[in-house]
Image 1 (cartoon, rainbow, N blue to C red):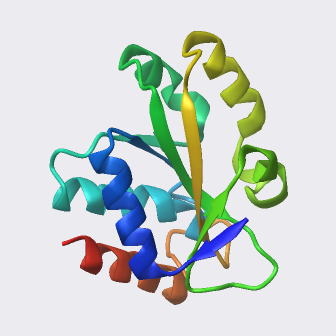
Image 2 (tube, rainbow, N blue to C red):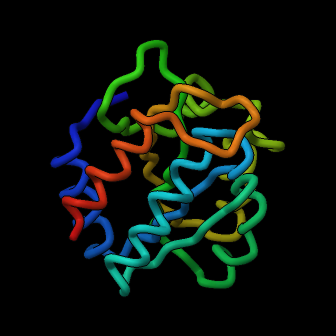
Image 3 (cartoon, rainbow, N blue to C red):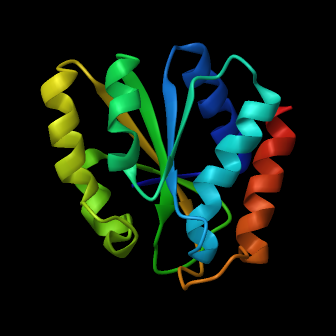
Amino acid sequence: MKIIGIEDTCKYIEDRIGSGFALVCIGTYIRSDDRVALEFCSKILEEISYANVVLCEYGLEMCLHEIIEKKISRMVIIDAVAIPTFVKALILLSLNEIRDYIPLSTHSIPLETILGYLKTFLKDLEIEILGIPVKNLEIGLDMSTEVQEIIDELTKCLK
């Protein structure tokens, strides 16, 4: 796990988009902060028209067909992460760390399982994971103020 600040995250995202990575954004609109990646990636689509963004509401399994059809070879998965102490920064995770930080309760099928399945179709798939810290994963339609501030700051520096 590597914690990176807002400015460095903007540079990271711009670099990945420029290097041909797709941004695969996972979340659920009805679980408060779990919507953070969907909201953030929707803003990216507004600001960077050439970005390859895949919005996966309810989980990665809901957009496997799109990833396979597009023959995506490089992707950054953006999702909510649960960490013990909330930080106003983002988290880069390795594939081995998914189980520890991506909330299992928000995915009907574990990410590890889906990524293994995906790699059977896209053998050379390069995967990076960017987590956005969250505070509240209860049923609800509003994000925490602190989580919304992260999106606002990231959007501002991507303009």
